[in-house]
Image (cartoon, rainbow, N blue to C red; front, side):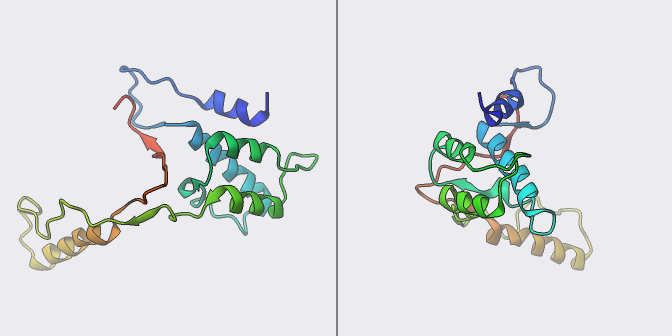
Length: 158
């Protein structure tokens, strides 16, 4: 059994109705992306490493094919992967962060919701809050057709 597969097995979470933790990892994909992230830290060092990048990547191929290719990457004696090999792997098997997302105007967006800020009397504060609220219209995204994104975290037993 490979080291990577062991990571997935040990990180699996049993979900039951008495679990009170607010968030749990959802899939092997999350564990895999965490492993890629850790590998990138070792390959690039702190200087060329962006920890926020890896959880936003989507797969170009199915997970098992991608894991198999990752496990076949050449490694040094200490288990590290070269930045060149990791870059090649990521280019071949992973989409860039956000490539799978497209703008989606929220269907339920209301510029000034009826019950939003009902007790705010200060006009400047109210205007600022409504301006912040209006950002949601521009920030909304959905998964582009043909991409199978898995949510990073879900509440247990939804």
